[in-house]
Image (cartoon, rainbow, N blue to C red; front, side, top):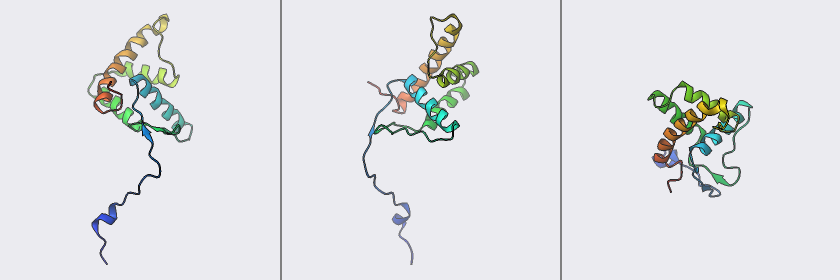
Length: 127
């Protein structure tokens, strides 16, 4: 007996609808991504909707957006190092600290370029 084509693509309905909440800005999205990376590195799973709120993307979407900026040479290796270092430490660079002035500049440039991409994808609230 032949199966109908529609039966091969059955997607069960969601049991509960979860509110989707866009990020306020690229910095919030980046820290969320870094939290998910830390959870992965520790062997766990990152629960993005654990508070009853889903995000408009997967953590991998943030990674792809940043890597696309790097491939197009809109951000460089120094930007990536600053994003990784301060993202992992869960604290942005402080321009009042002499050792972090340059890092703050790179951080701001990278997040500014990331903001443009994330707004176009609806990941950041466009109000």
